[in-house]
Image 1 (cartoon, helix red, strand yellow):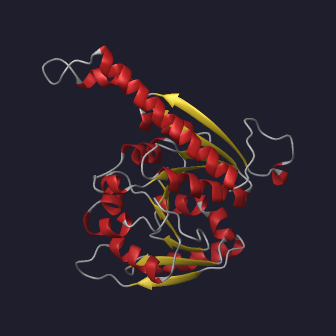
Image 2 (cartoon, helix red, strand yellow):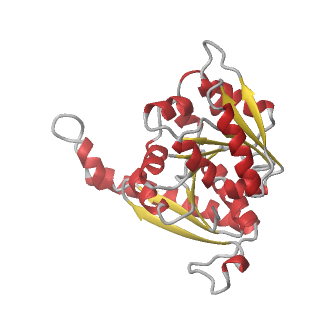
Length: 291
């Protein structure tokens, strides 16, 4: 999969800087067009959660303050995006270049919409090759994030989860979690551009079931011009495969992890719950996921 368009969903929260930085790096690396996207909350949505004896009614002063705060966050986020784009020397452009695709250099633009963020981001992501979303400490303490879930399930596009602080190198040492599933296959397809640009690619299987298919995968990647190795990790009783995959990725010195997103609960638990929380919550490893 060739990556020529990247969506960076910037909320204005603690993960915003990491999201924009990671998106800019890959826009430069792949010569892609980058859109910074910010969803401003609509105060009208608040009425669904107020009044009727369940909360205070929304006054005009409250709505005015809500709108001013939302505008301030949007302006701050836009300024952060513009500053990072300028630092990476990415020119602004709102329309496709007339040059041939292989000649197109990186470009960037900014877009804002008002409404429910998870829905808006998922809809907008459909028109980009990949969506970069942020991972913050606040989200780590929740069972899931609606933006990630809805984008992953409803956009039809792969999602790149950015840590709050971007590592010095990203995408040079890539670990692919492989279990032979359609989700893992789609994640692999989405990552081919990243794999082709990496210095080292490691296919990791947990347990004995998928060793044979991993050998076929190494051969397939060879036909794509990607040299990879397979690392088999025996199952350990009492330790989940997600924990083992994350631990192995760290042992391999990975700076990008590729995996499939498995519906609702399994991938939620992998990303946000149980013993994996401390590892993912360190925000050191970007994750490329496809459903």
